[in-house]
Length: 75
Image 1: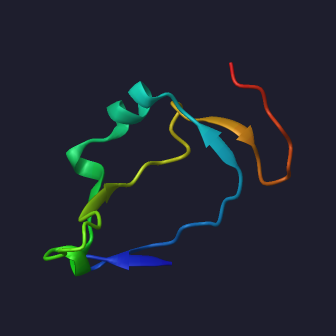
Image 2: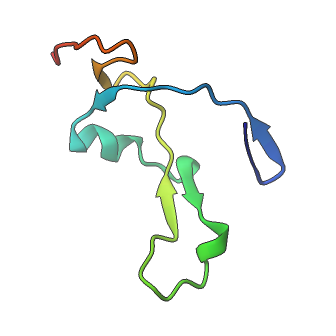
């Protein structure tokens, strides 16, 4: 269960290895999926203040290894 900003969502656990090209990852990084860390707004230690949340189910990602340890080929 994930909560924040008054919203709650259930996220099922996933294990595996996914790959995407840098250009495809850049294309997925939009203001809509930028997550700000509330505890780091005044951070002076150089930690990231925000990060992008990416959906591994997006077709830009290719599965290399799934949670059953089955290796896939990248095409």
